[in-house]
Image 1 (cartoon, rainbow, N blue to C red):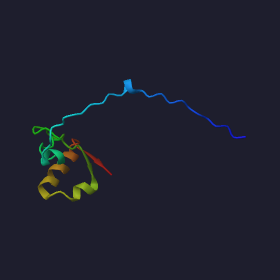
Image 2: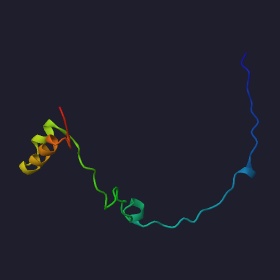
Image 3: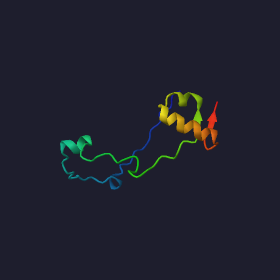
Length: 83
């Protein structure tokens, strides 16, 4: 009791366009993407914001001059110490 299913296939020749493309040949550098430089991530004149929150452990890594400046600003309440 198997039924055979047959589907009628109509060629769609008018929907398919046949053509050739004349692509320019790429140089070795263009193929591997080394011709152009990568864009810079940051602007050159970008200035980082001043660090106002300091953790106890981050103070341990500072040199003595920087440590004194940061501790003085913490005592003046310009910077905030995080425990």
